[in-house]
Image (cartoon, rainbow, N blue to C red):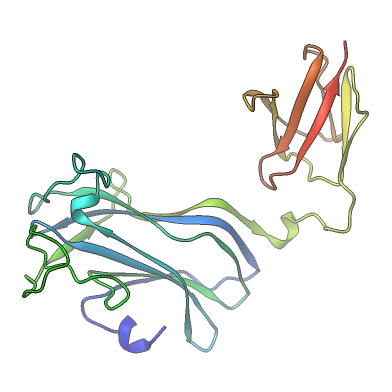
Length: 240
């Protein structure tokens, strides 16, 4: 990521503190902005970067949302912005499997365009993909307890001590079961779902200090035990 981009006067740059241990990011980041513009249309573009100890900034993912599509992409959803009104803008980034190493930082860059990667917005609320002069748009980003602009991860951020060695065999036994089942190779206090054969969640629980769980309350049948963090799934047979 060029320093020329990050030093532009029309770019807002937010950088985390230096990480002191590996931070593992899994899933799809979503940037939520509470934003306004003084024009009938405007783009909101974001870039997520990994900042190295030497200051170099490596682009991980980017995304953009056009103001007229804040409510959706169908014809009935499309509407011009009301200048000065604050909107909740969600920008989805691509799926990531990223490790921020010690000494690194996370950086989020917010801009009003990302040309030539994305089409230039004329900001006038008129037809798209036509030639013409753009209206200069002044955008504002707000953040408060009521309107928290933020980046969230639809996945998990784990520190190194939270990980279970991939060399440890994971199993749940006995299977079939009629009462207490035992978990081997999983973290204590990990969260689980029990689902029926249709995928409906029947109950949720956390493994106790004995790495066991009493499922004697279940009716006879087939069930799926799913660990929330890892996505590990095992089919279980329960007998009364």
